[in-house]
Length: 141
Image 1 (tube, one colour):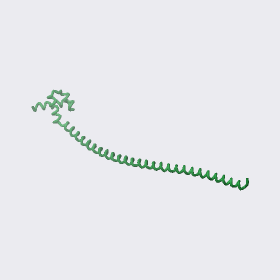
Image 2 (image 1 turned 30 degrees about the vertical axis):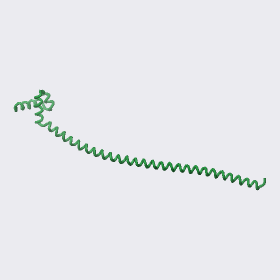
Image 3 (image 1 turned 180 degrees about the vertical axis):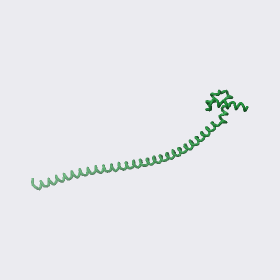
Image 4 (image 1 turned 90 degrees about the vertical axis):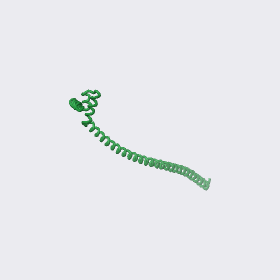
């Protein structure tokens, strides 16, 4: 073999090696493009999920604010009702402790046949006070 044949063989072999490297390079380039496209798709999907999550979070915050406002209003209404009920209870206690009411309870209870100790316990008065009220009631009749 002559030098020309060796030189042509060497050039052919080097071209073949370069061709193999080019094919491998384009295969790797194609894989990189596919990976890049997949990453872009995944990124787009992730951004959509993040957007959805942020909208859901905004709705939750708005709903929470609304519930807080409703609870504050309910708390205020409960406070007003509590104050009104305390006022009514105070008036009822004052009425129950009034001498006329106690006298009426004792007299009507005695007419129904309740004993003096029972009437004293029910009204919170002593036995002597109950007897005194009954004597006064008999004197008026």
